[in-house]
Length: 93
Image 1 (cartoon, rainbow, N blue to C red):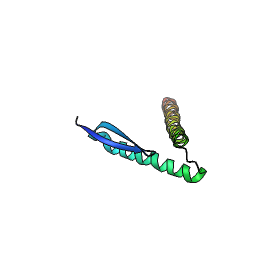
Image 2 (image 1 turned 135 degrees about the horizontal axis):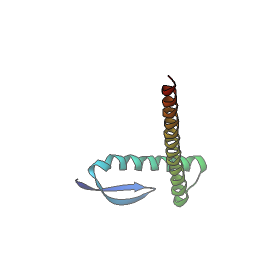
Image 3 (image 1 turned 90 degrees about the vertical axis):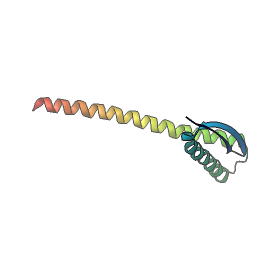
Image 4 (image 1 turned 180 degrees about the horizontal axis):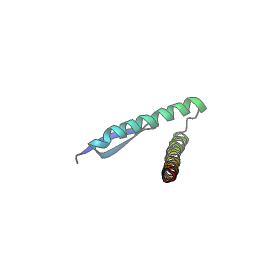
């Protein structure tokens, strides 16, 4: 797996990273998502403190991730229940 050096800028600060070529597109997309959220918060709440913007962005992204994880868990429980119901119905016939 080939490694690549890239510079990522978040909140006006640049961070050098060494990542695999496969990760590059995801890292760049993530950088853009973070920066878009920071810009949105700046406009929406008139916040200028970089630490506050980064903390609020981290909270929003973590909340989104938690919601996705919870929904996946709920979907797995639903699938399991449906499979059990199908099995019970099959045994009645």
